[in-house]
Length: 188
Image 1 (cartoon, rainbow, N blue to C red):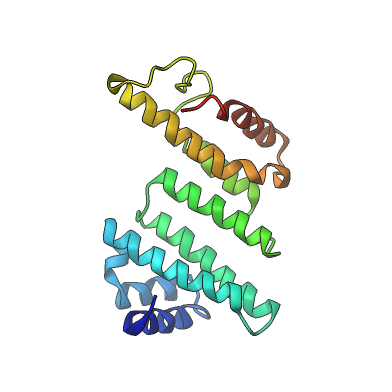
Image 2: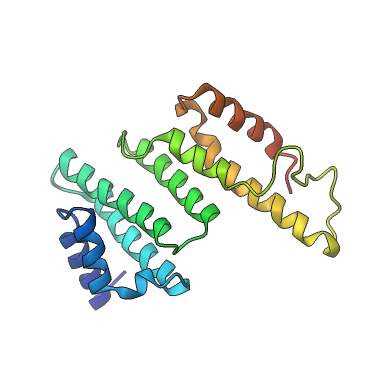
């Protein structure tokens, strides 16, 4: 992100950082009403803010507290974009799981609960383990397009959640994710 837009987005993020949730929503609605439009433009706006905020998390010069503050804003942006409908439920779940993984890898724990991220991915699955189309049961043909899509979407959600398996605290959730992970190779 460069130029005038980048400077503007940086200024908006700096305003959002110390604000509470209600103030953040009001600021965004005032500065960028397109973010709440529930369309492709809204998704692009949120992705741009998250990319800019993510870069600030990576290079925050104020030490751990500064990094944690920017990471907290990044989590809020990701959740707010899902809440306002900028992304579908499955895409929002994948985005939260990927963010959780990124934060954990960066040593930022406690901002996104791995159980919550995994639960979101599993809740967004379009099929059950018993009904999901698999390679051995579904021919890759045009007339099976819907079944192939269901399998692909399932695989994407499981792939996003699976690396969080070691951090999942709930034994039932861990077992459910492990069962899906075992099935993932057979998905299309």
